Image 1 (tube, rainbow, N blue to C red):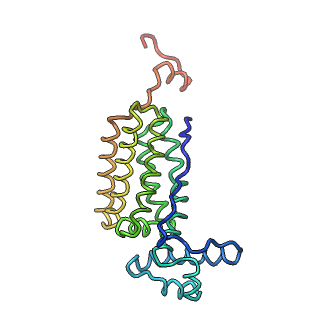
Image 2: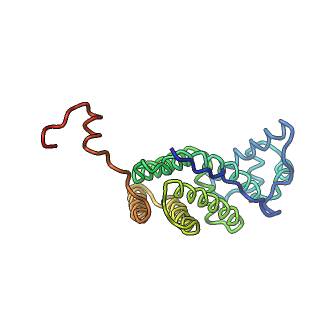
Image 3: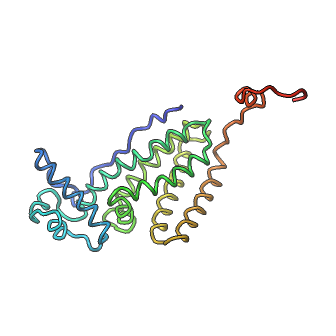
Length: 241
């Protein structure tokens, strides 16, 4: 199976106001930061970014407020740290999709449909994941980080399309990948605002639009010949075949 040879997503340093103050070194400090970030995910799911603040975070984590400020200058810096951790998990979620889509013998439509279903299932299973996505889409303080993640995903997808054999200039491949990544981000954001059957029908319709768009650039895998199908089934063709 072709390899994309694309590096895992890396993000530039956050602006000073959103960067952590101290990187934990000792095991106890690392454990404290882990607890703070785990509770951040829980609180974002419970109260959203509007209700999230450092006082509530300290109280629910069971630490003093100055402990939170020792590592993070404000609530957005905490969310940035959580997002960077989640980005690693998101990349792991997408690695199987990238690998299968890069294979020119794979059914790309089926690969995309399965990936879309699995993406929501996996994202729902990770505490804070969907809440962070909503926060990044709606919060000016997090837009730079959101764009960095967007660019990382787009460049990796462009490498996948090249590995599959899409014959387009590099800038065109990147434009296609950005279009697909932006559609996924927007679709997820709208999906989270809808409920029940409305949400599912919306998700399916956008998926169909994605397939029609990609059909301009991706070719279907070659179908096996009659002789190959007969050989695989173990039967002999009749005369005249």
